[in-house]
Image 1 (cartoon, rainbow, N blue to C red):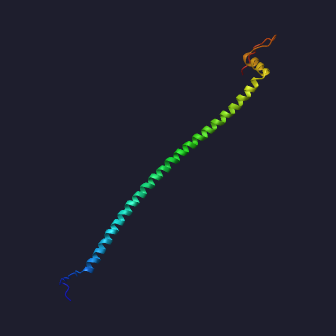
Image 2: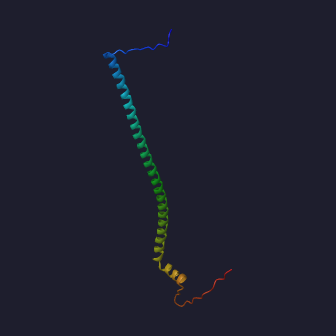
Image 3: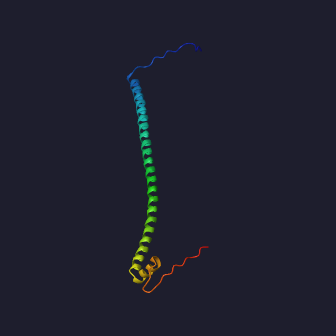
Length: 125
């Protein structure tokens, strides 16, 4: 057999072959369009995921900051309520005349009728 000879093959040109070629080209174009659409859709999904993730991240950090502030304010509220109860007790005590007299003697060094106050220094160690 002689392989050095070139073979020349002519293609059949008929309607069926042209129709099959058009269908193949149409399939290629559709496949190419499908890949493009999928790429664009994937990019949109990726961008949406990034936006949602950043939103969740910022909300989480904001929430943790607000929780810390809430804890701080709850502590402050507790101390203020304690102070309020102490002040209410002080008010009720100040309505008692004997208590006011005792405070005046102790803190302001006031004396009653006929009393003399002696100031005694405390010894320091």
